[in-house]
Amino acid sequence: MVNEELTERLNTLTLAFNENSNDVVTCFEIGKVYSKLKNYEEARKFYKKALILKPDEIGLNLSIGLTYSEMGDFDNAIFYYEQILKHNENSEKFLKIKAGAYLNIANINYFKNNFDKSIELLEEALSILPGYLDVYVNLGNCYNYKKDREKAIYYFKKALEFDSNDLDARHNLAYTQLVLGDFKNGLVNYEYRILSPQTPFTTEYLTFEKPRWQGENLDGKTIFVQHEQGFGDAIQFVRFFSELKSQGAKVLYNAPDTFFELFKGSNLICPELVPPEIYKTDKDFESHFDFYIQLMSLPYILNMNPNDIPFSAPYIFPNPKRIEKFQKFFQKDNNKIKIGINWQGNPNGDKKRIIKLKEFYTLCDIPNVSLYSFQKGTGQEELAELPADIKIVDLGQYFNDYSDTAAALTNMDLLISNDSSMAHLGGAMGIKTWILLPYFPEWRWGIQTDKSPWYDCVTLFRQKIIDNWAEVFQEVKEEILNKRVRKNSDFSKKSTFSTPDLRKVKGNNGDG
Image 1: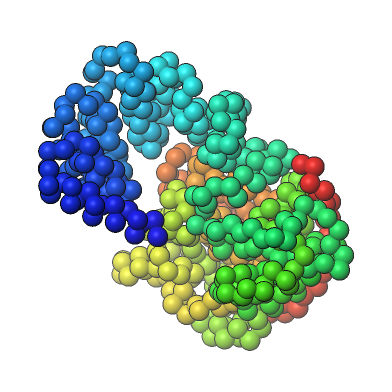
Image 2: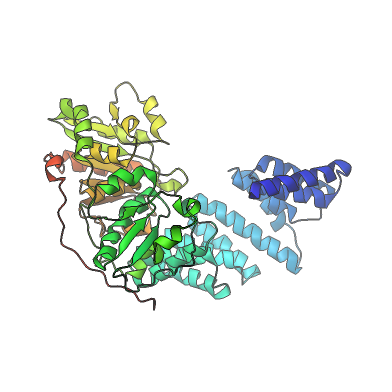
């Protein structure tokens, strides 16, 4: 709908432009619409025409620079930003533009990992415009990358002093608190994600007339848990359904289709799975539950801390018939160490988590090891570029859903994965899993340690230098060569569910 409105406005503006191509306002407005449509080439063309028509409108350089930045042409972006910095004027309007130029050049340095330079430029922006909220947020981001998290928290909180509802500041503060293990404050701030129109993976957060659960008694009640964010999040957080059931609740969950069979066979989860979009198609759906809650709000409402995370693993079990289906793929390698690999998750997620398949080539010359690709979808195309001397078996082509993936995974002695749903699946199944983390990891993996409070079977390998995966893979290779991997016993023998010891979590009655 938004694009339709923008297209309609563009048509109206184009008619006006055809009548008078020298109207500065029309040119500028057309540029704005093209920018919103992410057609930066056309946006830049109209911004430049507006600047030619009115060279003293110095702020147009900011708009032009932004189009170059969005296209990744940072040199040209900086050229236009610097035209602003060369200009001298003391009006309030110009000082805002000048501070914006410093901010945008700082952002370019941030993306180039030049954090000290970025901080220097951001401080210049603050000297011009002391209340510039975006500058405080970006300073926090820079200090996070420098691993000075106390300063990062300081600047995020400073931003919130100017606008307590700023969602970027709130989200980044939550991340920093959570990565430090401060779940008490971090989970409170993480709740603000529900207010954001720009939620991860385009989650549509729902509201109903029925109350949102705040920790009330669930005995004899039905609670609808809304799926949100990525597949890995689903695998990680469904463990909390067992806690809801232990409180006497019936759990409804609109799981993505790809999880239906896998979750149905995993007794620990025990929800009643409903179609993903049922709340849109069934007008009476709300009559089937007493409370609702978002999936990733469960740790907050349950008052979780890092020492109270329930059900490390295994709590997901594939269908034995599916396991049998995939065993034929591995018979020739029964005497070898079988290693599953995965290098990319959601392509719209954090790009720093993506690893190129070629990084795994260094593992291919390890004696008595066979590599199996579990990559499905984006990234799978890299298998077509394998050198002749590199052998990696493509299992992903046989996967129809996560039940297939899980069944194939039971045959692995080790899973090596980037931070993606595959890593969570290995952890939730109790498979020996090595997760390769970027320099700036997701909050759930904490800092420094190679262990995870979420999964006992997981070992974390962290980048020590930004974007340097070669060093990580050398460490992984040495671990394999030092015989840190052993042949697993037949997983199908342990696929019968048994209840593990529970680490109970206490309910939160909504008082934060």
